Length: 282
Image (cartoon, rainbow, N blue to C red; front, side, top):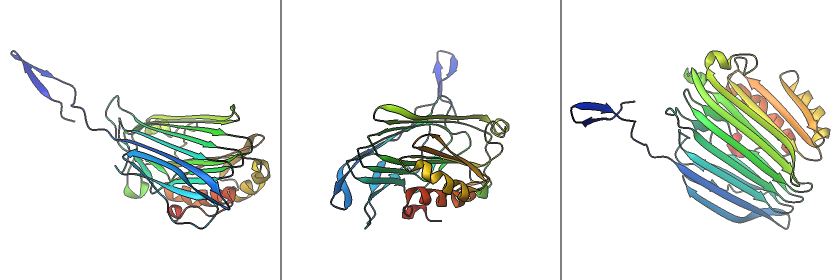
């Protein structure tokens, strides 16, 4: 990046790069139960974020989130919030894979997701993959509040560059934090940090050379019952377990994004008990 030069007296002084425009986007969606269906009760959106609602005939309200900038650069800030009222079923996905682009030194993209589900509600957080490009810097946070018997299905998948395009990662910074509470009590917490060079990311304690990974969480009364079917579906290719009563987790690594999606989709459909949003079709 070319630095600006200013002249002071007889000296030329190199200044910091000029500030770049940054994207901001927020969405809030509230779903309510009306008879046998879930409907939109409230929608607020601003900046570079939009929500679409494809036509559906099932009991759930499906929302598709769109980042109109096409990705997240250093300094961008996005916030998504969803609330499912008593007995409602809200599903949230993204129109396409999110992209985290190369960031300037000291700048980090921010994405915060806040979800809540009332008694008897279901909430599915099913975004498509996040592609981390070389030199990207992204901090992502997921905060969930569940009431009573509310059910949550959440997934976050990460792809390190697009292997089919010949992209390679030489360094990046990525932080992913999850916090899930039920009736105000913390029932699940997770933190992931990927940083440094390609050699560092290839270490066994990191990704072991994998080009893509996914984390899946199911919080609900049927978590224990679904553990066996999930393990039979995964075989030896991934790990699944119940970390505490009512909380099922799945970890999955893959060589690339295509292979990850191929293995991930059947797991999500099993846990959801319903087809995935149309945006997920391969």
